[in-house]
Image (cartoon, rainbow, N blue to C red):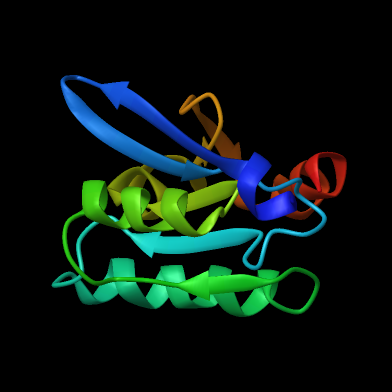
Length: 123
């Protein structure tokens, strides 16, 4: 019954969005980590660093296939509660990443050195 109650279809900008809203504790993947662009070596490298660090404590997945919107949708469909995106601001500006919440689709900036504490409070 957990599978049935987790399945949701939502209308977002005229398109159907399928979301598996698993409780965080049982989500197959808790955090997905992406580079904003897969053809920028520095973004991919930094995203892999973040992924390597997070996977020591959480169920994580690294994904750089397709555009960022498709990656978010793919993670929504498998029930991943949080997605972390490494972008140019991460490298050049403030050492922070974008964290997207599956259920609200809200995004917030979180400093890399505060990421573990952030997820401890969420997961």
